[in-house]
Length: 155
Ligand code: GNR
Ligand code: NI
Image (cartoon, rainbow, N blue to C red):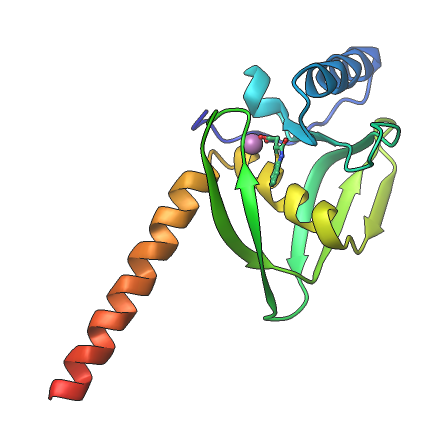
């Protein structure tokens, strides 16, 4: 779960099978996304379906996120790898994602709403990060800043 995924370099039939397996696993688990990391494959592969009826599977291979501005958005996140735990996470709302599809074609899109949240959650998995670390580190930062501010005001 902590291993960093490496880029996919070969776009072959085995990759198509892996993507199909990951998509099935995501649906079986009633998840809206799955990173290869979660099935112990350490390659940069993400599948997502944020549609209401599980009819719009999307594949992101070698995804790269560009944050477009400083606007943050809060969302109550859960994770198949951290069952039973939910916590509000703050992430950039406006991002651009560049990735490759299963045949290696590069595409760019500006996701909104849940897709923007989910893709960031999944890219964290690829980097060996879980949303729980994220919140605790944010909470740590928030507390530290608060303490620093109090300290400054006393001085
Ligand atoms: O199914 C999932 N739901 C979810 C809800 C809010 C934010 C992120 C997610 S992803 C999660 C599936 C999962 O753990 N993917 O890594
Ligand atoms: Ni997750």
